[in-house]
Length: 335
Image 1 (cartoon, rainbow, N blue to C red):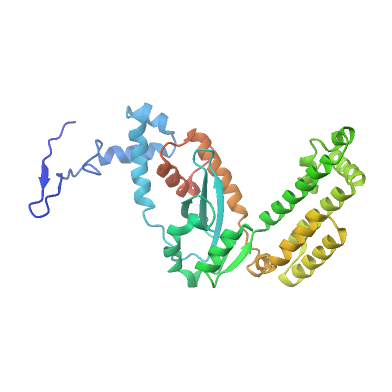
Image 2 (cartoon, rainbow, N blue to C red):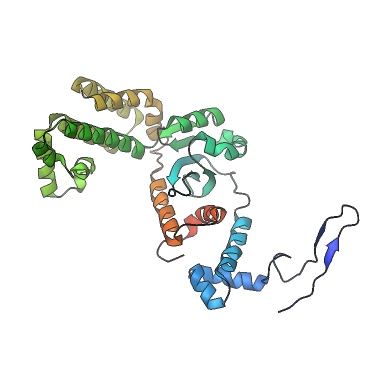
């Protein structure tokens, strides 16, 4: 199809543009509104490559059609009904680095994506969310100081909730550090007993087979500090599983910290200091009805699926838009 259009120049300001074409979504594109609708319909069930092959359009054209639609759809993400935020960082690979994702914990919608991690990545979100500060009840985050400081500064009335997933993750990191330091002190023969046993110490006990549980009991018996740390990790997990309120949880945390101090094990004493320092944020988990950012971990896996399907996005803005739309995507098909 060939269409002759005129170039229009404004007499007053001197700016110029093309004459609008009613059946094209934009004066500067080479496809019609019908083509755009057709391509978007196909994209619900087909990859970009498959749509390009089926329609005869260039891969980039198919991508740009979807990108333009996503830009319009997520031009302004509404914050009107948001009460609970979840903030987490995601690593996209060595080329793209980290992004910080803010989600509505109730609806699962993506509210903001910032490049980098920590409070600096949320600078562009600051002004928008500050207007809604009074309606935000709580923010679920990991235990990094940068996010805590950002929430305290921008949303002073919102409670900080330290996600229990990250609490256990931190405990696992401390325990793995103990495992490595223990190995460094052993002779070669003893090192063989701990080699490749990391998963055994860090995995949840209820998920272990009978044989693996036997191996774990043997390790706990032969390496006292690791055995104590492993048991304390399970104790910490059980606080979240059994405590039915903030009061019970506080007593359990205090008892855990006292036992950690008495053990004399450096990693446990360090974890006890962290728990005491972050106690209010830990108890907020119960005070806000077991509020958790655990779904973010599943969402992070979907982002990983997205980047793997795309074999590395060259268009970073398009990737961000696809992440905004990710709650609506099925991970059972190719992109």
